[in-house]
Each structure stands twice: as structure tokens, then as C-alpha cells.
Image 1 (cartoon, rainbow, N blue to C red):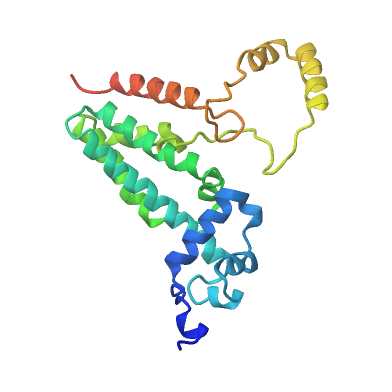
Image 2 (cartoon, one colour):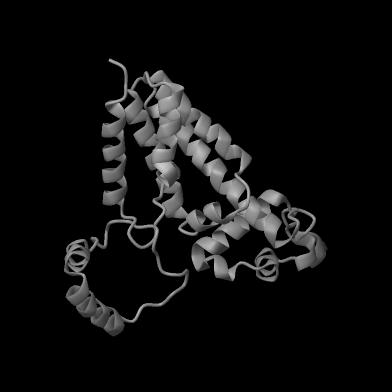
Length: 233
């Protein structure tokens, strides 16, 4: 008779990819604050020290998460190119940027992580090379393409970088917010009126304080319209 030990299904071997898949699932569900080497090891059913063979500490883990997100972005860009192979530059970039945004909406923690790492991930150079290629194919010079990259900023990665935003994990007090709005209306009536008018629809996905889908696409169209004026006729 086969022993219980012999009948047990073997566990998948630990690998960098398996660790990152588990880490992404964890932070998608509970946020970056939940991600520790000890917690991740528990999710994988291994000892924490086992993770260090695949990712060198917390910094290596965060770099691995960035690499995984960048891979998703470049894959989305490849699909966008396939979907819009015969379209003009504007439609191609729009699909590319909206594809990147879909990645960010799946992983709301990714914008802060991408902008917080000390070095540019190597995979992003390939992604941006594709953006420049699309602009040059559309008739723009390399000089205008360079300026366009500056104008796009983080929109090219699927989110808008806000100047002012609450700290991560900061809880809001409804009564305090209401009192603050009353005080704001007295001192800064135009800003108060704008904030009151710009309450986002609950169905409009956001990344950060004021990054709605509507505003994201509005800004893209504004930039594309401006770039078109610099395209040789």
C-alpha cells in the first residue's frame, strides 16, 4: 500500500517567477504595506530565507515587481501595435497609453513603486523606443519626439503624476473634509467651486487623488492636438 507521503502531490519548485506572481497577488489584494519577506514566504509555504536565493532582499523584491509590471506594459504595447498596425500615429499612441493604463488599474500600487525606484528599469527603454518610433513614423522629427516625451510624462505609463496627493494609506475624516471645504470656499472660492464641480463618478477608475479615466483621456487628446500642429504637412 502506497504511503501517504508517497501519494502527496509534489510542490512546484520555488523560482523567481513563482515568488513574483505570489508577491503581485499579495499586494494587489492588500497593498504594499502587507509585503514583507516573512509574509511572502508564508504565502508560498516556505522559509523566508529560501526567498533570498531568488530575490536579494526587499530591494531585490521591489525591483522584481517593477520588472514584472514593465513586462506587462510592453506586452500591452505589443498588442496595441498589432491592433492598430495600419492606424495613424495618434491612434497607435492612444492604444499604447490606454494599454499601459489598464496595467496600472490592475495594480494600483505600481505608479508609486515605478516612480520611487532609484533607476529606470531596462525594459522601459524598449517601451519608449516604440513611442519614439511611432512619432517618427507619423512624420515628427526626433526633436519634436523628444519634446513629446517630456510633455507626456507619466501619461505614457498609464497614470498622471499628481503634485499634491494624500499619503499612502491615509484615512479621511468626512466631517473634517466638510469643514475644510467650508473654510476653503471662504478663502479660495474658485478652487472650492472647481473641486465641488469635479466629483468623480464612482464608475470612473482612478489612480491617486485626481487621476480619473476622463481626465487621463482629456489630457491625452489635448497633447495629441498640440503635437499635430508641429507635424510637417
